[in-house]
Length: 459
Image (cartoon, rainbow, N blue to C red; front, side, top):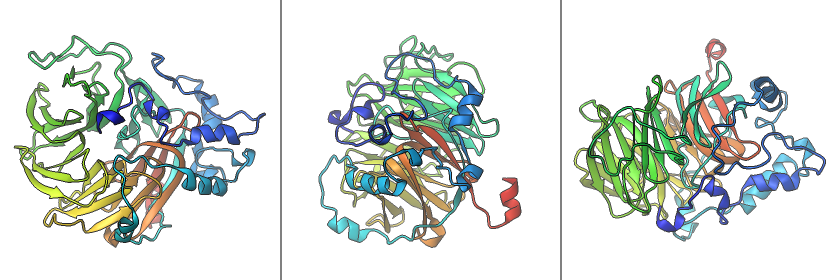
């Protein structure tokens, strides 16, 4: 993600003239005497703590959608199509025609389309369960979308303005677990760290990850924040780089090949950094030739996938950073990756609107290419059992592929709005989708469909 694509300021993606957003169109479509449900303006850099503390029951009654309501015909996002000038189908048709995908490199898609798998859509692997607008995702940078993580089928963490929110799908309540508008003073001091301030404040969180009890967030000015969710305060925070174009594009929490827990950051200064979790000291720093937009470690902790401002993706040794493989095939910059839990397959997502699947035993060519409907592939996640791969576009579509069927069968989740993040629960029983939109921003919950009706009744 080069300097030309960094747009400073909170909610910066809304200023991007190259992209079209449904939020503007909704107000053109709503009749003049109708009041849209939800917020009526985008909060920008206003310094508020969080905006979830509305009257809970009143908001719930107006905005939430249950599975029963959806089965009875209510739109899952609560969009009142009956009050709009267009039907849902007509709006979808127009949206598909008018949406402009952001490209960093221009390319012809003719040959690319020929490579893509012919996929049977229409499967239902995950059933719609619930949608709430009590918590709603927000996005700092239009190219970065890893802003939602599930730690169980009932617990989800997401970015909402200057707050990291926790949503309980059992209690149907949201609570703030981290406020980054206020000064953040770490409980763990680490002497000698690069440009470590006494505190950080007004951090614009660009990416986040949660694993077990450890939450990690990256900031727009190169910040790193580490917090244990069951402990008060922030364990560690710092600015990891003084580079002018310092945005932290991706963070991850993983176990290295020795089983030790590590934190990884990928930055616009072309560096991947590895931190231990005892004192959060930087254990390794690997340099590359372009801004690193995404990095992910294989399940055994030995291999590192590195993606960035290049059409090529790299495989490196996770201990030394030495590049051992070059993955060629994408036609634009890459922003997402995911490892199958067996460690044999790597999925990479690009602004060329495709996801490529690679067998690490033969990296000469991807063995399959999956295509989106409208835009870049900005988020990828495998289930913990490896059965499904979820692929999110920047807006409107999440695709869930059946890996056992060779990725040729899929469920297409069709919604309206920017997608801030996707996450399966660790047990693969739930899928969550964060939607960023000034009116219909929300958290969508789906539950895994079981053929055994008894299992369906207890999950």
